[in-house]
Image (tube, rainbow, N blue to C red; front, side, top):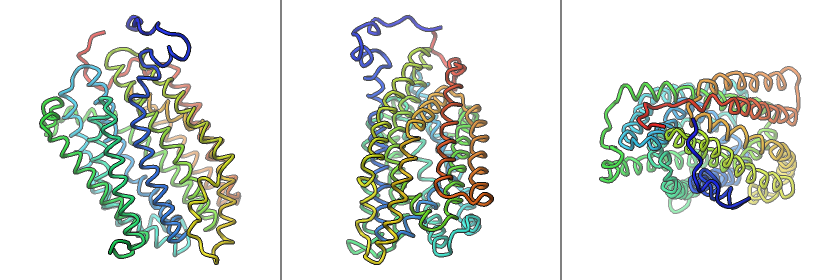
Length: 475
């Protein structure tokens, strides 16, 4: 049952009312804006990383993109569980149980520890994984080297994903913003030094880019552990209670497991798409890597708005205010769509703004090949512009459903849809010998279907009665 309408819900008219009311623009922006800045800092880092590697060689840039997609696919199941600590923290915070927040975060760290054998398997299996993709030998060698170095940073990413939730789940997202920006800067500096051999360091090329990521991830993880040990954190959030809580650990696996599976399935489908389109030739692979690198400039900030929706849905459901949870979702969606629309227009009208930095370091010998790659990537941005708003819908609704705990439905949907993307791309490339643009039409159609499916699930309203915690708050 909804709580009565607060008096401030009725103040103002039009835009002022939308901005000032509870769960309106001001409340969502306060939580989401730092998350958007955080995602933009890491997006800028990845963009710079790809630009540096493109300057080093087009093959290195293409290989790093494919290898990082494969690495991320391996990380997704534990990562989704660790990141789901965010929903537990948000609901505990909304329900008035702050001293359950620290123990919840440490359960995520135990998931990270348990996931280490997966990284060992990934390291050993790397040659077989990339042999399946059937990329040219010189590309495959670079992919394996980059992938294996990244495996040393996987557990660091998981620890960061769990511990950062102590602050983001409470709505203190500015803390995450400053930390992410600082360590993105560290990563960028190490990229420059270790790819090109600057400031007295050797030139490690593609492996230097991977080691920059690994070192910055572990430094950030150590910083978060230090913050957990601060006296105020121990006093308010009980972060000193870092023992294994079996009941809480099981609840995290129960709700976070399907969330991690959903992330794994969708990223696996996307990775299959990247690897299969790589069979169309080096130039097609390079153009695809460029387009997706540029796409991240739209995707990650939209992800930040969606994370804001996830946090606020969790907090308001902890307060038993599903009406405010719903309003938070649609406010965040409006912001995400506005940003997405702006980026779509820029992709269509000034593609060179995003693509030309990749080609500033080209040699005269490679100018002709790069001209063809540039033209193909520009046309691929048409597809990116077309599906950016679809991305905003599906990402926002997925995060809202996760904020409530509706993770099993999301997992089953992802299983079906990831299989569709992987199988349809395989058929297009190997059976029908489709060109690159046909493959990109497939991924655009896939995102359209996801947007429709998750919107229908959200509107059905089952999420309104869901909780992932044992509540003490009374309606």
